Image 1 (tube, helix red, strand yellow):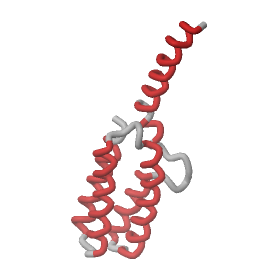
Image 2 (cartoon, rainbow, N blue to C red):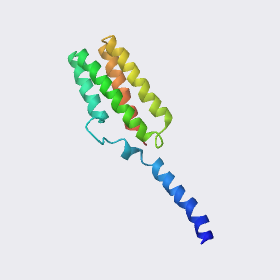
Image 3 (tube, helix red, strand yellow):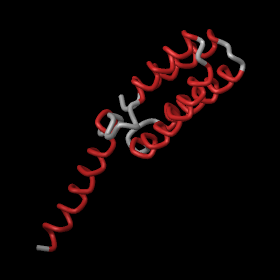
Image 4 (cartoon, helix red, strand yellow):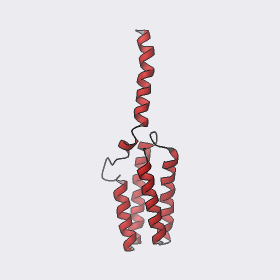
Length: 121
């Protein structure tokens, strides 16, 4: 019995850790109404293209809150650099919206979307 436990516990632990590390694509999917990152990015693009800066500012806060929820879920299964780069993109987006710069806002959103797609790969 002891030999069985000595062998099985490390094997089960390794399988568990591998499953956690490979779960990034599943964990980044929306699990509620308020954590859909691709939809938030699309809504922000529409607001920025129409010049609705107040709504874009509010939706940026919603995007940031959604990202905080998802970052907690994917922190063990995704590269830390990708998580940090998404945070930086949101910061650039906030600055571009404050400056009401359409091109910089769209660049930041497209970069954030690219990081979102790379998350969990």
